[in-house]
Length: 476
Image 1 (cartoon, rainbow, N blue to C red):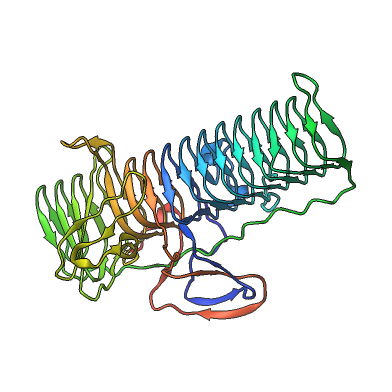
Image 2 (image 1 turned 120 degrees about the vertical axis):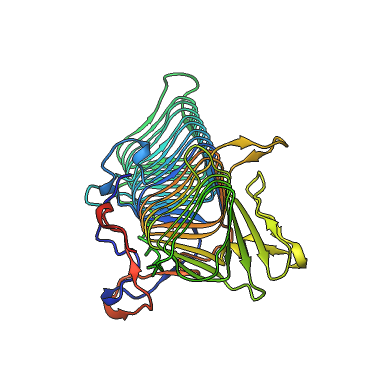
């Protein structure tokens, strides 16, 4: 994956820092947050919170949707998007929330945005223009604010208004309805059959296309207006990413072949390397590991004490669960002396409660008590198989992952929790992630400071890590 060293501080470092303090925004709704590219695969689903990327548009040097800051492939769904660069929303993809980016917003045919769009642009070294492109038959259920141009293909519907500091053009049979208005500081060019239910203000020229039938129409008034009458779109401020605590591994490694079990006492270890069909049991407390590798068809048992203290795992290098060809990782939870319960996400992405013993506790609550802090990459492999009962089988995960580098979730993964990467995030086809109610990257609200000039000494008990070039990224 593309990697860049950037001046952005990704996590707090034990040093004398000049930081900005002032009016602060509390960011507590990210279920995925990265400092790089975000890739959401075909028919994947993200529930609970927003997908965010700090990748600057000036660094997205390769053209095409696969190099956008946030890339949603066809049929995927998420609750909202924020980023420093651009967003690509694929065929029939759904965004059930707002989009706020400092680059462009591009939708492909049949995409639906159920929220307000802000394409700010103009904020990078080589900035995107802040354009909004509506693919054929795309639907925007909310207002559109653009620094650049707004261009629609045929059949685009907007249930709201359009505000752009550039041009506004449509293909045939567009519809700006629900008393929606159009404000464009440059030209307005409406394709045949397009209807604007409200008023139009334009800066240079107004064209109602007669080619085709019927002629475009404006049901309200059309007035030429001198600039500047359109406000700039809302901008996205880079969000400080999480600190990742360095592991202090032990010297003892555990290596096992297939069909074995490991009940791992809380403590410090070197490498944990388990073969096929292994079971790993973790307990409330803090673990320090050099690396963790589990082969396919394995289980992780999470056993909380009666006080439900967290299970906290610090890993200096990579975490690799499963193989690229096959994996159906199972997660089992247990609280105190209660019975075990397998973690299963429902087909619609919803999450059942942990019910044994009458606790009736949300699996989301348990997810916040499982924290993996990874010094390099976190990879959860999976693929699509069916068991003897003709049920879909993939890989499951419960917990919060913080990674210095990349997070990769394979096809048909089912994740309950949140993912925070200081580099790229990839979630492949037919995967689901639900983090409804997750608080934030450091188990609480993340404060995004606004300008002032106050110097602070930030001290952490453990060493905090930032992303580094691949050739020097190992930390333990």
